[in-house]
Image (cartoon, rainbow, N blue to C red):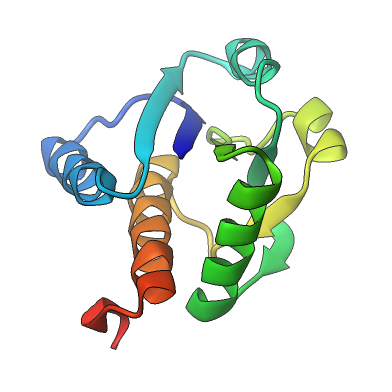
Length: 139
């Protein structure tokens, strides 16, 4: 399985980069996780155009419990040929072109920085795989 995170901007904080790297490492037995940190919306649109299936993070998107997200993620991976992209917008959110074309999901009604959103998303992806395996991580 290949999961790619697309986001505008970089991780400016070393601790965030280390935390994201930790979850990417934990996911390695289950999936290859790639990250693409892009400069602006135009690069984001171009980079994501090659993906067969994208899920865009947006406050107006569908919300899930962790258990629901686990089922949704596994189903999306199965339906997309084991390749899935997640898009995190920059400070101004997602470009209109992506919001209108792809499913929207939400991690919360709260607003997070795009750097923190990367970490939260990676943790939830890891949690999803652990829930699917029945591991005690989610307890």
